[in-house]
Image 1 (tube, rainbow, N blue to C red):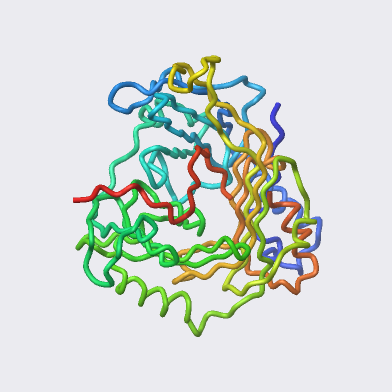
Image 2 (tube, one colour; image 1 turned 90 degrees about the horizontal axis):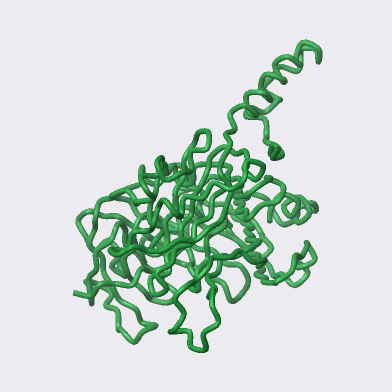
Length: 392
């Protein structure tokens, strides 16, 4: 039987009057604990691969793995994540448990690009192809965006658009000077742990974070129906006033470090950290990655016709500081994804309001924190990952 994950009591026990004796309080405490336990549902937990059919859809029946009964997990919500490898005509799907409905999403949606689909649900063994309509992403409104990339030789104008593209949201990265459009839900909303992403349609979502000197993200997503909401001047001015120079936002010192390894590691990685200032501190770690490997041994990769999806250990830590344009767009706490037990996560992403002076910071966070797990393909995908633009 899968181990029940340890959950926090849904209400702080301090809300039970201290004037009430402990024996009188015990029934209330027990009821609260049982309420939390029985709100959990069983989810399928498995990993498999299948063919991509003509038209780009996956073979949903073959890809709808269920695993063994003893391999299922218990969670507040279930997930199914799909990574599409179009050149190899192969899809990889992983199922498991998560502590929450990420972004308030129920059903399937693209995760910033057409090669990644994330599905979430609540209910007993709900993460199946019938519940997820054969893993077909739901439709979202389409917006027109500016498309430009100085990394690829463009000279992006401060006003207006050099190119235009269409997607479900627009994105701008100020450090790399890139503009573009994305499909489905942006990864930034997952990073911020937004409880209901669709409630913010029409408004920009801007943030800046850093995890060590070489990992800095500074940008916005937006869904302005009037179009071109990611013009450089327009979004840069908003970012400066609402994120970078927001005077009323108190700042915390945070550890700032990034670390990758093929083996597990502990809090000792913080010894090489620096510090940074942000409204919040964050810490994220993934413990594995999904890879596609050939199933035969032909000399030329182009001759390979059969591929298999595998999970292999890969440990990556990001810890640093975070600023956001509106604290209502962010939720302090942790999001965990796991295949069996909450104590053995595939990934965990936490946003904290702690100060670095807290002597227990590293130990307490490390015990419970080991970003949101993504089905990783051969691309590196940040919260500001740009969908390849369709130039007009």
